[in-house]
Length: 241
Image (cartoon, rainbow, N blue to C red; front, side, top):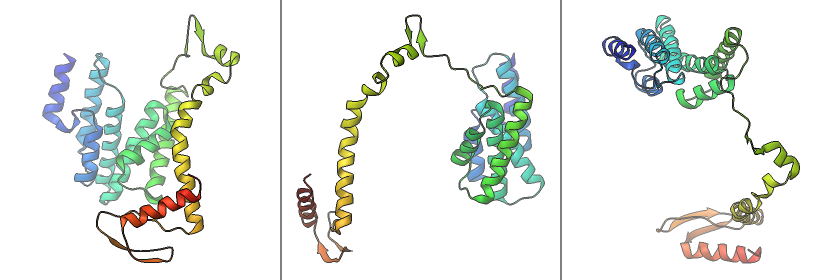
């Protein structure tokens, strides 16, 4: 019954409310100048409540992002703000929703900056941080300062992680020593060669198959790839690589 109600609401009142919610918000930011219809927040809230309440296979992240973004866009439309300010309010609504729902203020800010906003500066970052902090405070007033997810300890009836570490504190890190050395050692060697060549003023460059004019470290003229390889080989031999 709840599924039929969700389909009826979304199909007849707000087709944008279907799906996860985040792609629709990104589409509004990049292709609709930050305009999201106000009805989207109402339909998304009702549809999400019906789906989650009836045991549907849905979560809180997508709905709260689209609901918060819709509130921000609606406020921007009511105040007749320019597009970049509506986008900022969308990001503030999305970040605030994430922060209040999951009790993650930093996660809300990072989500808004990384996913929603096409660019960020002081004039866009401050509203997002303010909205996220306010939403976190309100969420903790109503739901408490508890984490959204409790992760059980890594232990079984025959194994406890703290006992293994106390018995051999180097076991965890020592087992990763060899793979770490194999992976990091070549990178470190190459970096040392590059740093040494820069400090001595050695000239090297990467070019395409065609020859290019280069002017670097006092070397001017036409340099071929073979000349570059010769310089690199001499430098590597000089530094014992």
